[in-house]
Length: 362
Image (cartoon, helix red, strand yellow):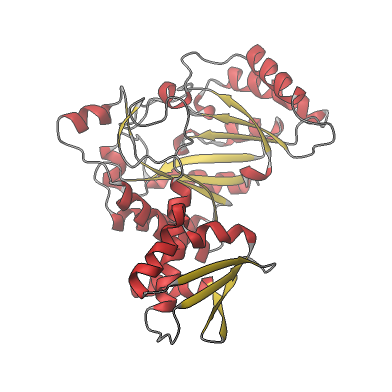
């Protein structure tokens, strides 16, 4: 969803947030150490608009970080009025913000509605009580359910953010959170593998040996199954992993954890590797050449990052040549050619097959 819009980002680190969750240091994550004012918001929007050509009709102001609806109502009103005037003039087209599920109520939602907010993202992180408690989240799964119900009643678009690898989390718990999120029917989802960031309680837990982060391989595997689950239920995953930045990188403010600047590509490559493996593993081949024909957007994921899937197919199945060719076809399927045969691979069929084999769905 968000990648179709020109985003004007406004960071409000820790403003309104009543808790210090074990994983969180918003000032490190956003790279900011001061709170934003309405005058600064006005300047940010004005400067960004100068860089966008006239006639563009997909501009979004997005408030990131902190818990926007936890800010005192007077300040919320000032910040939103500043951007709403641009929306009223048609200079921006959408307003989005992020917040906590326990900071949603009728009074807050009526203010957001009045001042033109379109999208509310909730930091759910987990729907497992133990994981929430051990992460010092300060809210319950019931708070999430109640917040979602209210947001839907006011007809906002709804995004839900989840994390994997929090203290007390397991693959099964992450998948169960994914399933419960599906039941809440959000418009889109973000998935964040937990990173150990400087100056957080999680850093102390890691250093004293009471927390072990996921490996990159584990994170990619769990995210792949979550991506399959959400795709199977027609829920868009708009981001996997934190946006890399000058400070969000290993040996900078990320102490350890499954960080990779292209983690989404790793996940999607693994997604396709599973499909290709399932298609090929029980077939007999007379020749050692296989050809894939796919939509332009699918090519990189079939090939895999640094041609990892091509190398995997050659190594495991003994193909001498693996070709991936661009073809103007829908993204829901692609074609495989071998031994004078041309077969259509329906991605949803193999997603369902994999999820059932792993007993992730019935």
